[in-house]
Length: 238
Image (cartoon, rainbow, N blue to C red):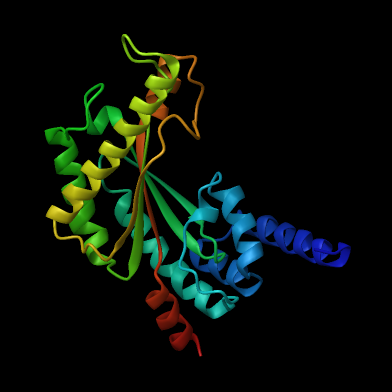
């Protein structure tokens, strides 16, 4: 990318972030959608979504207009508000690789699982049932990706490498447990685009403290605009 393109990109990001503090998702969707494109969307996603945003989003391959971004932002506002009603759910508003608003919902493994296993607790099933019925099933035009994580603690009688692999396997099992239960609550299999275990990677807090390790043991659910949702919003904005 030449110097002029980098200057335009920098100015676009500066304008977006200077205005986002006082804007809801609808307004942010319009601002981001109007100046986006795959490259800008990926960079914004990486910043706002702490690295994960650039990995989610339908591969539409074209810039998204301001009107489309505003319509999708309004839907994401509503989905985020619905998700915030679920006990044990931490909700953040992020950006996908199209520069469109998305929703990240984090469930602590302390809420979902007992230490060292991937069996959902009764409280977890109650929370996920509400999440499925009140959020996902009400927004079937949104795609979903699920990621499981662990802390970096070793396993008894295991080498460091063996522990990393066991943590990776456990994170995959936990992500799959969440996905399977959401499916049992009526969520469409076509809506869930990815179920991945990330193991010890991408910690959100220090693994040197018990409180930090608890934050790192988590399952993240991302809700973002499907290709059909983008097409429908583009049609409605014209």
